[in-house]
Figure 1 (cartoon, rainbow, N blue to C red):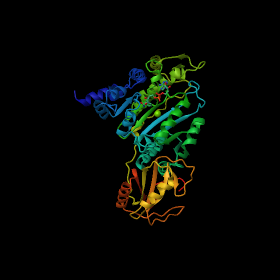
Figure 2 (tube, rainbow, N blue to C red):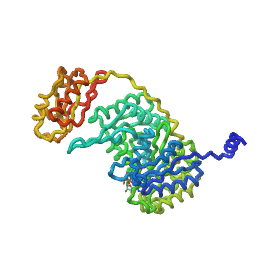
Figure 3 (tube, rainbow, N blue to C red):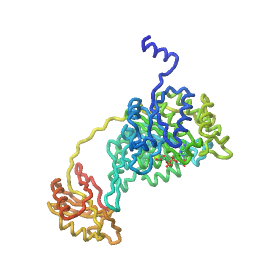
Figure 4 (tube, helix red, strand yellow):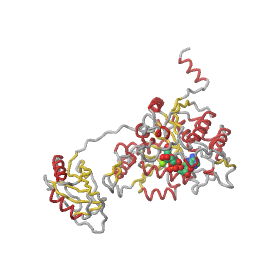
Length: 504
Ligand code: NAI
Ligand code: MG
C-alpha cells in the first residue's frame, strides 16, 4: 500500500495524523498539572504525541547551569512545538533562567497572554474584562546583562531594538485584526527612558497608522498598570516590553480571578512554546490542589496553533462548563458560588466528563486557528550616518567632592577633548552641582570635542576620532583613574543618540 493510500484512508476515516510535540513536566506543581492536562488531551482525542524532555531543577542541580540537556534541544528543534509546565530556577549560583533561554534561543519574540473574566463563577470585580497582553519576549532588562562596576554600584543593561519593537508591535496589530479586537494600548515609560522606551513608542506610532480600523493609544506604564488593575474592562489588546509585560500580565490574571487560570503562547517564526503564566508554586506542590487551568488553556491555544481547532474548542467548552458547574480548585473556590472544592485530578476528571458539552451561561469558545497565520515581514535596516561626538567615561572614585574630581579631570582632558560634565547616578554634579546630591562611587564623566558649542537647549557637537578617546583613556589610566567602562556618544543622521544628564 503506498503512503498516499494510507493518508487518504486516514483522511476518509477522519483519523488525523498525530503531531509530535516536546513536553516538559516541569517542577513544583508542574508534574501534577501536566498529568491532569495530558489526560484531558488524551480523552478528547487530541492528535498529539508527547515526546518528554528533561529540563529544569534536576538538570540544573546535576551541574548543568543552563537547565536543559542536549537531547532536549534536539527534540525541541525537531518538533518545533513545546508544551511546558512551569519550572523552578534555583536561586543564586549563576543559574540562568531556562524560560528566558528558551524564549531567546528559539526566537520566541511574542508572548501572548489572553485573560477573560468568568464571572460570577470565578470571583472578579470586573465581569466584562477580556484582555490580551502581548509582551515582547526577548529583549529589555531580560537580556540579563548585569555587571558590578564599583563596590557600591551594580547595573543591568536595558536593550531595546528597532527590529524587536517592529516585530512585537506589528504582531499586536495583526493579532487584533485576526481576532476582531478593537483597540491596542501601548505601555511605556518614555517620559523617563527617552531612548529605549522612546523607541518602542515611536515604532508604535509608525505602525499603528497601517491599521486605521484599530483604535490605538499609549499610556505611561505606571498609570497604565494602575488603570489595568482598577478598570480592566477599558482595555482590549495591550502591547508592551518584556518587564512591564511580565508584571501587567500577572496583574491582569490575578484581577480576573487567579494567576492559576491564564495560559500563554510564546510565538516565534518557526517554533512556538505553550505554558501557563504562573510559576511552579512550590508552596502547594505535591498536594494535588493546584489549578491546572492555566496549562489547560495553554494546551487549547497549542491545539489551535497546530490547526486542531475542533478539538481545541471541545476542550475549551468542557473546561468552561466545568467552571460553570462550580467544580473549583482552592484558588478560585467561593462559598455559596462553587458547588464543590476539587483537587487537580478531580478537576481534570470533571473536564473529561464534560467533553462534548458547551457552557450554558458563559460564552462558548470562539477559538480561531492562530499563531502561524500571523506573518511578520523581515526587517530592513535603513543605513544612517553615524558620527562619534564624545565619550562617557565611567570612573570608580572613592572621594565625595565632585569639584575635586571635576577639576582634576578638567586638567587631564587633552587630545582636543574637554570635560563637559560629571553625573552621579544620572544627576549632574559638575560643574555647578548642588551640595545636597548624594554621591556614590560611580562617576560618569562626559568628554566632547573641545570646539563643541555647548548651548543650554541643544548643544552642537563636533565629531571626534576614536583615537582621541583611546589617548584620553590612556592618560586617565596613567593618572591612576579607575576607568570601569566607557560609552561612546553618537549622532545618527544628525540626531543625538544619548540622553542628557539630569540637570544638564
Ligand atoms: P508562582 O506563580 O509559582 O506562585 C505565586 C502564587 O500563586 C503562589 O502562592 C502559588 O501558590 C499561587 N499559584 C500559582 N500557580 C497556581 C495554580 N496553578 N493554582 C493555584 N495557585 C497557584 O510564582 P513564584 O512563587 O514567584 O515562583 C515560584 C517558582 O516558579 C520560581 O522558581 C520561579 O522562578 C518559577 N517561575 C517559573 C515560571 C515558568 O516556568 N514559566 C514563571 C514564573 C515563575
Ligand atoms: Mg512572570
